[in-house]
Length: 327
Ligand code: UDP
Picture 1 (tube, rainbow, N blue to C red):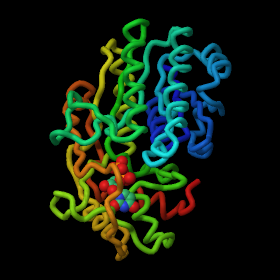
Picture 2 (picture 1 turned 45 degrees about the vertical axis):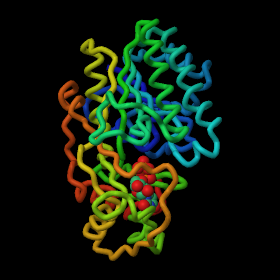
Picture 3 (picture 1 turned 120 degrees about the vertical axis):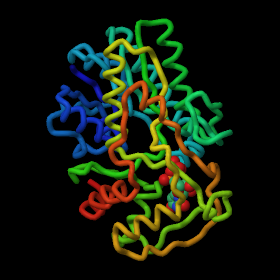
Picture 4 (picture 1 turned 30 degrees about the vertical axis):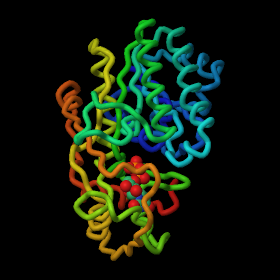
């Protein structure tokens, strides 16, 4: 089976490409390398540098390569940036997906798995969050991902195309093989920022808010290993190949950790004191986000392998200590 991975040089995309190649798939990668890295692309995958908003470029590849299914990661994904520059998010995330869907319909490609986010929910009404929960994004990034989901919904009704949308909670960790990992510029995510302290790149970690209604006053998140996310994409593609209907799944461990618990675990893994500085709440942060992933477990047969936070942070540490400046 030949799978086209859009955004396959990015963090979650590159890990999915590694898992696909290991599982015996033929993989074609497209990435514009604006936030991705050529070095992150598996050497056995066929790589095209270019932008999915370029219809001629995309049509050319879809005509040339016999693609059975698409996995779509090619999107901008920084919450803060999306609030400062929403037009960038509408252009990259929505225009890119519109061009992609046009080209897929024209070429008769009928299966797509795509990365969505817990940010589609906004502030949750109840925990754990089910796929049927209200979707009311509190930032433009989440709004564009929700709009992408809706595009897939209506296009799948009009054309011969089925989709699976995967709503990730907090993606983290790195491939245990040590070859690929998380590299964002600027970095905004908690675990890589915490690990910059023992790596000598930062003196302390800021803790955003200490007065949330949680056990230690800091925000609770559901941290899910990037290889487990990668596996879910493969299972979702298999599900569609077997004739599964269009669907939406949450991906998380169903367990929440506070910011302070994450820092404490990082201290244990790295054997470093990791000083903290308590600061104001970060705008738009819900206090608790925990997924119910029962549906993915039941329907896709998904079973996370790296559920333990210490294991997750150990894989991240292995990557960052050997690649302090990323790729
Ligand atoms: N956070 C923090 N300090 C940082 C970065 C993040 O306290 O330097 C907190 C943030 O407020 C949130 C949690 O860590 O409660 C996870 O944030 P991250 O940006 O990693 O993911 P998000 O939950 O926003 O998708």
